[in-house]
Image (tube, rainbow over all chains, first blue to last red; front, side):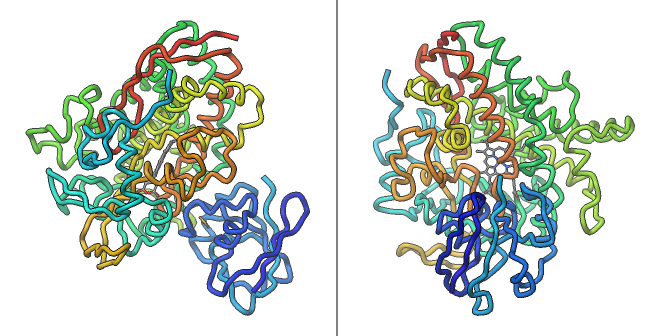
Length: 104
Length: 418
Ligand code: HEM
Ligand code: FES
C-alpha cells in the first residue's frame, strides 16, 4: 500500500505502508517533517496532526471522542480535514491516500 | 578540564541512591544494554525489579500500557494498595481513566498556548541572568537553574509572586526526597511511617495540598482568571469539571514534575557549556535553536526512570517477566544507547531527528509539560549566550543523591561578560 504526504515546502513524499501500520508510524519511519509522534500513538500528544486530502476524507474511519478532544491541542489550528494520523490505520481501502502535513 | 565521564565499575547497584551520587552509572547501563538488556535487579528495601535499558525496548514496552500498567506505582519503592490510592495522580492511572483526565489539561499545555508565555519567560530570564552574571563566579544551579522553573510555573498557574520562594522550597522537599541537602525526611533512611499516605511520602506534599486548596478558594473568590488553572477548571468536552481532589493532586503533580526536571536540564546545559566550549559559539550563531533544547534535555535526562507493573507474564530477550513484577524503564540508559543515537556522549546542539526519551516518549504518559520545558530551556540559553563570551567550571560539580532525579545540585562557574 502507498501513502503520500505533501510537505510544508510543497514537495511530496510517497512511501510504502504495510496494512495495519498507522500513518504516524509510517511518517516517523520515513522522516516526514513535523510529525513527531511523541506518545507512540496513544492519543496523548497531538504531534501527529495531518490534513486528510478531501477525496480521502470519506474513506477514513470517523474521528473518536478522545481524538476529537486532542485535536484541540494541535499546533496548527484544526479544520474539518484534521486527523491525528496515529488513529488512521492503513488498509486496502486507503491505498494511495494523500495527506498534507501542517507547516509550523 | 575534562568532559564528565561515568565513574562506576560497570556493576553499580541501580536500586541504591548512592550509586548515583557521582552521576548516573553509565558504565553499568552500557554493560546491561550489551549483555543483559532485561536485567533482574535485587532491591534491599523491597521487591526486586526488571531493568530495561535499551532504547528500542523502552519504546516498545512504553506504548503497551494495558500490559505494563502505571496504576500500581511508578517509582521503584513498593507501595501498599492503600498508599497507591492515597497518593495517586492521573500519572498513576491507565487507559480511559487516564485519557479522561489528560484531555482536560492537554490544551492548556499545548505548544500553541505555551508559546504565548514566551515574553514572560524572557523577562524572567533576563532578570535572573542579570543578577547572577554580575557575580562573576557563583553556583549556577542555585542562581540560574533553580530560579526560572518555579517562578515560571507560578506565572503559568497564576500564584502570587510572594509565594514563589515557599513553593520552590516545598517543591524541592517533595521530590528530592532522598538527598539530605533537600529534606529532613530522607526517604530510604526514614524511621517513621508517618508520611506514607501523603503525596510523595513527604510532609511537603501535605502542605502543598493545603496550599492548593486555599489558592483555588482565593482565586475563585477574587474572580481571578489568570494562568492555566483557570483553563483547567473549565468544563471538558463532555461537560465534566475537575473535582477538588483531582485539582489538588494535579497541582502537586505540576510542582513535582515541572520544577526540578527543568532546573536540572538547565544545569546540565550549563555544565556541558563548561566542558564543550564550542557550544557557546554554536549558540551565538543562532542556528541551533530548533534543536538545542531537546539535545540539552537529552544530555540531562532529569527523570532517570519511570516504573510500570506487568499485568501478565511476558517473555523478553530470554527472560520471563511475571505478572505483578515491577519493570523499570531507564530513560537515562536509552538516551546513551549507540543503537539509537550517534555519539551519545557528545552534546550536539544541532542533532537531527533527536529520538531521545527524556520526556517518556512513546507512551500515553509522555510529558505534559514538554513544550513548556523546551521553551524555558531555549529562552534561557538564548539570553545567556547573548550576554557572555566564556563560561568555565570554577570547581567540581556535585550530583544529587537519587536514582530517580538526575541532577547537578551544585555547579560552580565563572563567566566572562561579552
Ligand atoms: C525537562 C523537563 C522535564 C522532563 C525531563 C520531564 C519528564 C517527564 C517524564 C519522563 C514523564 C513521563 C512519566 C511516565 O512515563 O510515567 C513526564 C510526565 C509528566 N510531566 Fe514532565 N518533564 C519535564 C517538565 C515538565 C513540566 C515543566 C511540567 C509541567 C509544568 C511537567 C508535567 C508533567 C506531567 C503532568 C506528567 C504526567 C503526564 C501523564 O501521566 O499523562 N513536566 N515528565
Ligand atoms: S502520536 Fe501522540 S496523538 Fe498521535
